[in-house]
Length: 255
Image (cartoon, rainbow, N blue to C red; front, side, top):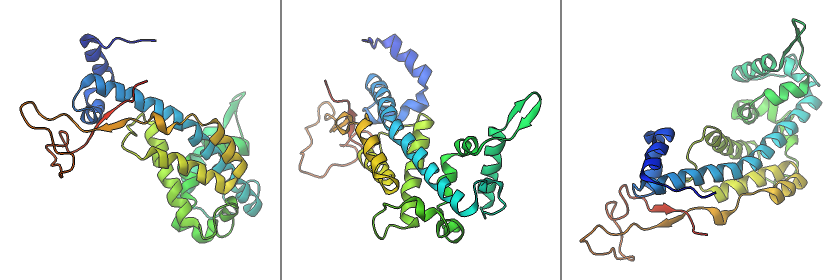
């Protein structure tokens, strides 16, 4: 479906999206409103393409860690009788239990473990791999959730990788700009971490991922100001020569 970007429509879209949210895109687009809105739309498409692999990552990680917690601390580890969690993690578990609980004929029905696990946010599973949980959770159980990690890859690296991907997930979930990130590296890391848990799952998610590096915007040097000579491509550029704030202009590939 074609959409004509008339001046009136551009003003309407800017109001709907908000000038504040579009400000970074305008900076990327050399203050061209239409180009900024096209970049905003493209950002949404790239976010959608990464959401599938991120969903696969989150489900894989939480199920793998839950399996190890069940083996080590019991099938109802979330009742906190056998496991030692940090205060924030305890609060996360209680919130998940409350969210998963249902009313039936006016009575509160105890949720299943599957319902509770589904309610625990990705931040919880990343958090249980943090440094404060090294002895109680990682060494006792969580390390077994990553049987295919490369030799020498330990808790710190896994936690750091997942924390990076958690931030990406949150930016996508809150409809934020991700164009400034190295999305190719992000996508590769998603698949790599999944492979530390299960190589077959990694291959399945990779085969069905719609993320395409060729779909990323390209960087273009801005045209020189009217009346000024073109910038020597070999000479170092100043911030004034390289866009309004020192950044290259982004544009969407044609075709």
